[in-house]
Image 1 (tube, rainbow, N blue to C red):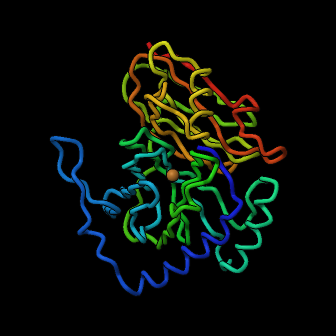
Image 2 (image 1 turned 60 degrees about the horizontal axis):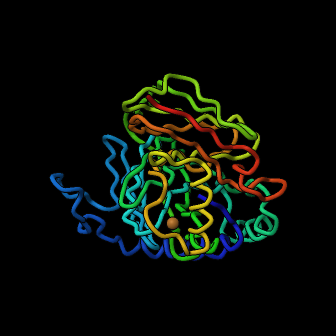
Length: 306
Ligand SMILES: [Cu+2]
């Protein structure tokens, strides 16, 4: 949810170095399995199916289990949070021709005042935070190149999880064969500085949402279903305690996911099953000018499903 890019450079550099060693070693990602929800088949950790273009990524305190490489095209990332904390999957594309040596100083500079990330990286999106243990998803068009998977969630104490190990390289190689079609959607969420505009019927049931950033800044959409009788005020109070490490009892919401930050001019998709209740969309991306999370600039949208 919340964001800081301060020490990203060093962590990413380390992760990328680890990548080249790992590729040489060819780790067996098929043997790591874990029981899914009762009554379902076991879920493989960190897999990619080239036929369906579904990539499964697991997150926990504080690591990702993900495929090392996937092929280009529209790809659905299923993010399974094994907990116990809140996590998400932010996907970042590194510009072609840029090396880690170029990348590091740019991120160091960017970390000083929370300005938008440097042009050498692109916030590409990804599934936002589901309640642990739980799952969220996002479908985005992956271009060939080098990517980094990160968790920017900084609960507790505003220490982003990528500094604790939630950072991992991902390679996207050119696809062969027919490309998958862009998803179809029935509800569009426009993200702008600083508002969410929802277009389409917010009825009970499963929806495919298109999240379209009309910018200019990067934005995300975290979708929460409020617990009965709870309001945005309860969410804010809970978050404050969570940051301080003093939260107790269940959160006043169910986190359903949504989309991690994407740059202006991009779109991605996510699915969510809406049941009757009150919902809120939030953007925690730090502002390019004052560093405050966008929700403090009004990027909060409440809605009701009957
Ligand atoms: Cu995390």
